[in-house]
Image (tube, rainbow, N blue to C red):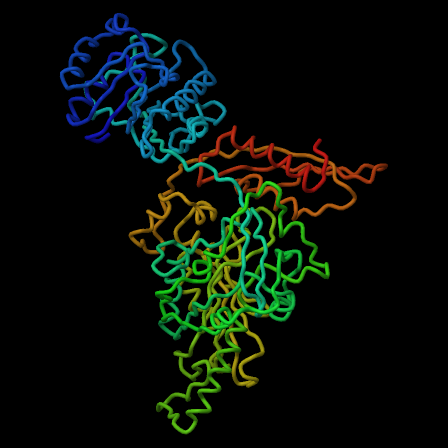
Length: 639
């Protein structure tokens, strides 16, 4: 509670709480309401004195107000409040938990109509009633009032929970226990503070235009991936945790290696040939294949000129220009997603006409940029061949700044990559990759040195180094793989040199370093998320969620399919229909019909969101949308 606020108190009995607030916060504008009529309310012990105190302080009292129908009260219509307070609600008499849940739900739905945009709803409950982990001991969820789920029905999220300060309001006497002039046990009571959630935004496709291998192409980014595009999380000056993790890693590596981070704009699309040449181990089923809308054979001069740019960052990754995801945002045109299919779901990678893929790695672009850099450096090297000198004790640096010391150059690139993966708690379909590559004298064991340095930086956050046949893997629990260090047989065809590449998943590392409960928070549009990082907290400082204890909801879906079934298409449709709120999909049963060449699948879906208020009603609505999408797009028959 604070001063200079318009506060609405509902469900008052003897008005002792209203009187206490009036005395504590003289600048607060109080409107106190009571379900009972005035003559009935005055029967409560001390009510007359408390009413007088409120009135003397300039407060307003309204009798006969139903807290589940606040908008119907003539005295409250057209008004807006910064706080709405409901202390120890109860339906009266021996009402069970279901009736009290209904009371809470209807109160939340009613009060949001009078709540200011940044207002708060304060609900005090006896210990155990709320059904959250803040209750000690915690009741079984089905035997609680499920306060978070009830608030979500009104698009409210639980932002704070703390003890009810009964000592602060010494004149407060709780009444109404079983409709009597008796109080509740408020000593261990909890105050739940709710705030508004952002609404779910409708899914949209993005039509993107960019240059790929000197061709101007146009294509659609499918609806389930569109929210990851052009967010600028790695832009210069960004305080997003993904950028902070990148800066932390580059600073730690810069102690031993010089790092040159490029800001050159690279396209989201790769050709199939580029992918096969640089990433032969990638499975086609793991990629998001794209059909082009249009392809122009030649780029204009302006585009060609842009491709030749090669700006670099310093060793800490700072720059004054925007990365590709920001610089090309003016080329995006938004279209409604109603009739558009999932690009990564519906394209056949074996088709002759399908030649493009959303980049699953930055490695092909890295190799292209380094090849160009070698050519440029070779030209400059020829011009200045007679003027080169070496420093005593070090080799003369080659095209990549190679020396026999620990100050050799790492060339870096970071940006968004895409994977066609099943819905999973720790498998984002899009994430930011940090790619570093350098050529070093092989006798220095550069892969081992880089792995050890990364382990030094990340071991405090639960990351361990595992040796594999072709390199090193960075592993953390519970997400698994967060990075790799591997060598390739390049290095200017010199067997004494070794080309080493580092690939890191910045998103999963951000989850680890800031103790995020869910990687989907990284993509939240809620300003409260980024506000937590505006003071640039050091890695290791846990994130304080703005949505506490969100409830998960489980729904099953079963359907008949034809003789073939592509589960990846199913997962892509789930992401779009659920607005990304499904965090787990589990196959629980199958049955093949012996005569009809059909198979029945039954899946269990878990809906859960740390970014929005997800109610049972909203989750069920998403689930019904999923049934519609599956019927129309994948031609299944819902059972």
